[in-house]
Image (tube, rainbow, N blue to C red; front, side, top):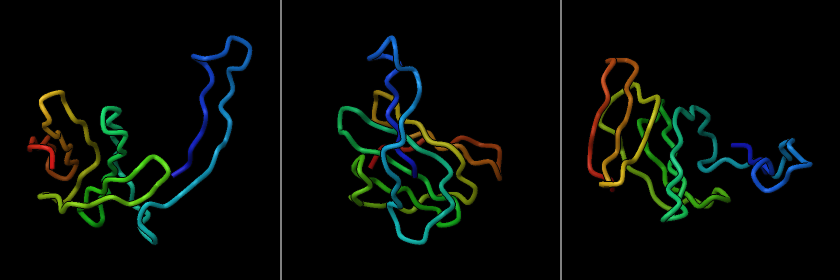
Length: 101
């Protein structure tokens, strides 16, 4: 994962992104297929499709927890205000809804 600073909202003179850092939340895992940031928790959730796993981390990449996902081709993730996850599965063409962990 690559982290960039986007000053577009905070600056009228600087509109270019600035590289900050890069990190890997799980060493050796490279099949990142979905991200969701939950500001109220300050937690970043990432789906790794090949591992059928949802990983929770801090915004600097510090690992928090992980959960096994029920399907095989996860390619997208979203969380609504009722704490329900929506996970898109491109191998079945379905969107799975489940309670957030």
